[in-house]
Length: 483
Image (tube, rainbow, N blue to C red; front, side):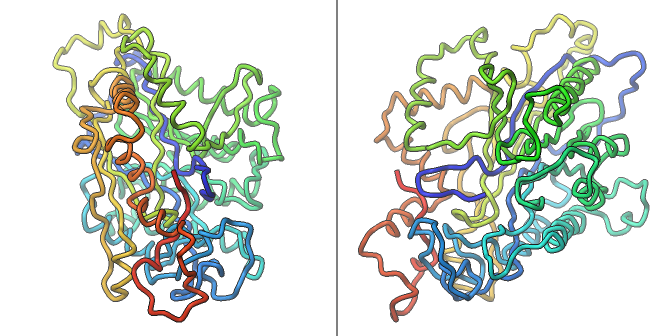
């Protein structure tokens, strides 16, 4: 999915934190011993690998060498493809960027993470009529990304043993570019879900295989007896999926999906499990549509100020805050801006009170980890990125991800609870939309490319596919959004 001028599609996972339940187990459930926890997990999304990517050609060609007209804004057609990617263009990710990403993950994070949230779009966009994307290519690219996860986070000595825990929990979600035709998913079981099930088989728990075959969703107990991550198939709620009708009938797959989710949350509450919900597209349940779920497109210029001003009116009381949830929108590996990913830290300190399991039924939702900093509360994240302007100048040196910012240092957030996010929003509004805090927020929204994007928006910019001057670093950055 693309980000076009002045429109921010909710692309990367949406990481919806919804923590339910009280910590007690029913009589039939025996808690498993906790594994050694590192207090960190990875969220990564939108690889969009393109085996047809060609370096040193115009972005107008979608980095496929041949010219291709497009209705995309002119700034997305400008620039030259670099060896490691063409940021802020219509181009997908070169295979070199995919390899560099997994090399960096293995070098820096192998055996240092507790689980991985991976939210889809593992094939290139089907945006070139001369080289159409086939189902075979789409599934082949999904298999390639799957193998890279297994190779990066697996133990080679244990991979041949089917029952051995040869990798940390990895929770994938289906993206709209993981299916053919784009955006269309029929009710399951079907050939598409069967093929994806076969590819993602190592990641789906044994008792969840039938569920995935029916609807493309499942959950994983990433910390035994403590935390589950639910992979939601929001394509059944996606307006562009004309094969289904959302949740407007009891027999629709969207309705069935929500009933399943409700059962999962009830089970988690009964067992005392906390829940992280992950999804590829945005869930928005509208009462006016009698439960229909729609994917929204947000115009940042038009709505961001209004949204932030809304938070100014929210009193910081638990009675009000319990009506809010936290949605984390992750940056993508594909160079829509600069390639980026996030490492989250979360609270792994158990409650000291040994009797908390007995008295837990008296706890309310406002005491959950989404509202107060307690066991399993996300504490913050570090956003890593590759500066392709610099990396593309050195084609023979594999680039590495570096820290762009952290929520602690840049926004002084103690944790990622609802009250902390509301306080940040109020600080931005109170300081004004010309403040350094707001400018910093915009810079991070565009993963470090804001000033370069402004440069590419200037009329004086000479398109690099029509002049004969020597290319400089600025030729690798193209405009996409402006504020």
